Amino acid sequence: MDWINKIKWNDDGLVPVITQEFETGKILMFAWMNPDALKLTHDTGHAVYYSRSRKKLWHKGEESGHTQKIIEIRIDCDEDVLLITVEQKGGIACHTGRHDCFFQKLENDDWVIDQPVIKDPEKIYHE
Amino acid sequence: MDWINKIKWNDDGLVPVITQEFETGKILMFAWMNPDALKLTHDTGHAVYYSRSRKKLWHKGEESGHTQKIIEIRIDCDEDVLLITVEQKGGIACHTGRHDCFFQKLENDDWVIDQPVIKDPEKIYHE
Image: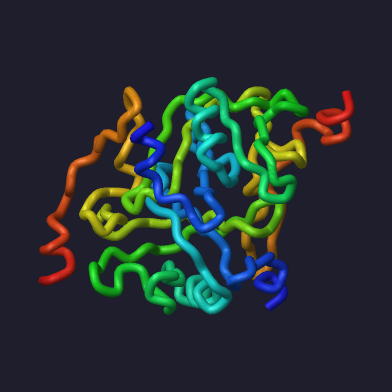
């Protein structure tokens, strides 16, 4: 797998991943992958990340159903950051039930929420 | 500075920063900030990062002239990743002289360059 070996993994064996929505161009989330996660992402066509808190692979949407279909995989000039373009199932990427994770905007020296909750997280994770 | 204290800086005192172009929605680059960089970014209205390799503040465009005017600063749900939206001066964010840093796309298990060099880096940094 030459294309995987070309990547400069960090000391923890991970790379940062920026996830962008194909349809809107919006940034959905930011996460990490290890080589296994990236290989699975590539092979299955759906985003698989590495959870640093749970220390294991995280098949995005495995609990919520909010899977991400891969459209494109890009790497940066230093070959140590990935940018993936996806179709977000359900239009919800964030565990708070919002469209994306970047729903807090700096306004007058304060973080202000400017995105609605589309679906109650209780209903996303416990149905 | 309550809004800066709310941020969860990592063990190195940094946060990852995704930089998106306002006009196109494209991801220009990925970098890091420490509290001083973020405060300067906020106060000057132009992107200032922290260079992990040079271990110092990096006023984006200080050598190239390719500064980034801040339009918006956002933070994610976990409050440990920033997304900034900018106007990219010169339309070149990458040190390779390309529009952005994500010019390598995975195609048939190989990284393929699909963006032209707009300006020769020799001319960007030595004029």
